Image 1 (cartoon, rainbow over the protein chains, first blue to last red):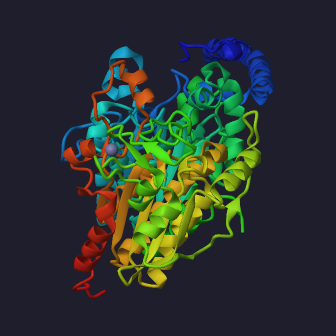
Image 2 (cartoon, helix red, strand yellow):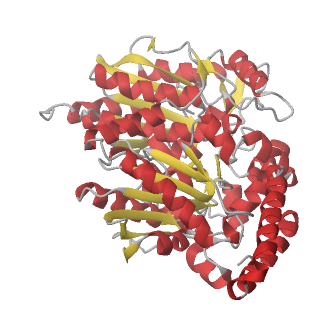
Length: 317
Length: 283
Ligand SMILES: [Zn+2]
């Protein structure tokens, strides 16, 4: 699974691969079972130890991991009858955001997610998950569709940020993001957002005005990239480690600040080690959060969202 | 998202080039020498070439409002949720900004009158940490819209901001969602929101309420946009075209309704408010 390996995860990756080989053997020969159990235990212990000591910047690297499951990897595991809907009806289709209708445990839902590409070719198509205004306008179309037909909205956040380009500015990147926030704020349906990887600033928030916001264990959410922050503060992008720590952008930080409501655990070694297992864990969390909103009326859902964001911020009165 | 104060492209270097103990100043537009008194009398607009120099928050209040602003929530001051320091602590930066601007935070809000008409007025204080939006600014913009609904007032909001405030991290980003949610409630009350885009309006402020006015008005040559010029250049590896992200560029691309000279701005806004409220829709 994980073709690309970060230096600090090497020992865990090696063990995870051994476990995988042994599991294949054990499937045909029971004598390998005890050794498999031992190795699995050892792997998860080592992973826990190593991953407990990760620096914030290492977690950022995990959130950007090239083998990490992306939106469509979850879509195919969690949903059936996915009908992808494309285009903003104004200018273009933007493949950095995928959207559509799907069935989730028997219910129809609207899905909107950032989509990164695997490999150069797909990354060009997906623009590395950095939407242009058209992506946000497609998202707005989906929020309005969901509102009109009374369907819950599930969003998946995974972007370095909105694309900084000439065309994006010409076509109103600012307006598109602002309007997206507004469309989410007024939607009279349940909205659950999950940060599955990188939550890069306003370009991420445009999918994030939800009743409940979840984050995967190694997901991050930040007002600016650590590199960008370091470049501004110290004119030195190489001090990103320090910036990552100061910005408080890891899952536990986000929970503590009230920015997310729940942290979803990842498989041993991170979501990229086992996409299926990652999807099972996310499914469990999503379903319980979604059904917990069942009792709320359309107006109550809008109020609930209002109160959630109204309470965020720290000041002295 | 938040831009550094010192890296901002500025159209205003006139103070540094002041001649003769600040009595004379050279216009950044035409290079002619004017007296400081002349410029102050025309709200920092050059009488020879029309160049707009930076106008401080109190100047805007004098220009727009019939009488002094009745301030709302002026007692709100920043916390330090991340205990942030970049070598110099956030708290020190806030204290220094408060001393320099004599303002508690990067925005003033309150009730004012424009040609006799009561409005909910808000204006960013750019000199306060680049007009950046942290929790206090987000809270005050939110309260501006909330209170305007209660008192049935139109909102006139003057923006000048580098974006979200880095020193409050992710909580600054959340202010975008909070303030836009409040704006959505305000819109349901069918009251007008006039968004005034001053130099500069960028980042998280541009990408939240700034472009959601019923009418968006920009100042001539104001820098307005989402991403910083340097970030774009580094991404696309091209030099940006002249006039990129200036008010005139935004007008050409359909993002603002009008570019209005500072000296005509009040009359224009009053006229628009008169139209929008002349036949108020029944709720
Ligand atoms: Zn001049």
